[in-house]
Length: 289
Image (cartoon, rainbow, N blue to C red):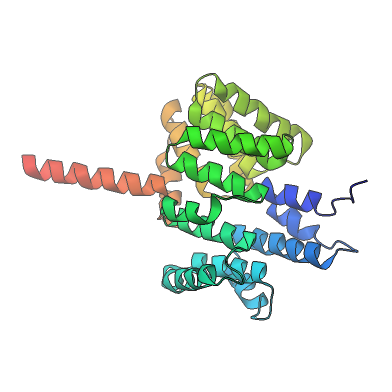
């Protein structure tokens, strides 16, 4: 008999973006020391996802185990541009340390940080060997960022062999289907629909369903889902970006969502593309004038 997985619900909440639920329901009795560290990792990563970087930095001290130190490093990296360089420098030092360099959580955090840096080759150096479902799922994301859906599919197959019903396997399947497009969009929609029927509706699931709807030309349904997501968090970057695109297609007022995105998330890819396009247009006008 396999021992019960005490962290199943906590992991699931985290994977699906129910971060506050993960934090609120984390007081679990009778955990082994290993499970307790994983529980703390998931709780602190939930705080990071909610933007509470300083709380994580303050609470994890220098005596904490390596996985928690890695998560503190992620909080430092995300806390502001002034901390990025020192966080990356510490990360490189730890990865080079033979005693801790192969720790799966440290490798996961390395992958996340280098993905933020858009240095996908460096990210893959640390994540490509896998070892955990999260590392495989991150590999899927990295390969999709590199527009290599063929490699992403190989990673998904590994995940399916390990556990086809795992939440991360299903999510990775949906991401790949969205990237491939065509008839696969309907399959992606059904995965997000299944999540919404089994678990509380989160911003991640609402955005997943909405993006599928937009791909299928169902912009009214997408708008309804995205407004529901906006009610949960008025500053969520993906919701604002998707609402902007959705309203453009519906011929509705969309500039408010873009303005909110620029204010809350000036580094978002959509904002950067818009700014770049505006600058190119201005230069073109000056050459004609």
